[in-house]
Length: 267
Ligand code: MLT
Image (spheres, rainbow, N blue to C red):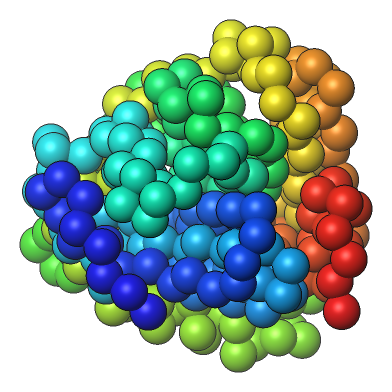
């Protein structure tokens, strides 16, 4: 684990391996540990960089109003500068990570070699969804991060995962409970005001893979197949039996899809 200062924050990152850079960007309200199976599998062949975004894991938080998806994308670009990564990266991002990937495409296109979008959406929040996020942010600040764990956990995993892998549900709950309420509230506010990226999809020029859990109710397979159709040359892999947290729920299948896309062998 390393700490890197970028702008006004110090970020916690896990970095392992050498070679082409693979940047893994976690979802909400999680940290880099959701990528543990991908870090293990790909660090034998690639330089894997897995940060805790601003406000999450052991990275510094800044208050609501100071965080946007564009700021998080800029943090990633600054992190790559600090790590002296000059070659284009594969950006692999899940859900909120995908919301960060879109401004990264807009603002840092030269840094991007290829894109893997896992269980994410291009649309912005509806006014109702944005209001719900603001209500949740107020409660999290007043009561603590357990409020967001209670709200999110039931939506993240496929029924089979809950039955057969209860330990990953519990580990995820613990990550959420440890997350700084200020960081959670700031990200909720940032997601509520994020741009719609539907129009961007047609202009994505790098090779792109979409990965979606069969039972993902937040970013559904139908919606993600629609996104894949809008991105020139993109392909969507549906992960049978998995939910919104496909890389954690079904790592063998997700890693196989990523390895094939990247043209690397994994053990
Ligand atoms: C995530 O997994 O990052 C969240 O589901 C994103 C969201 O709340 O829209």
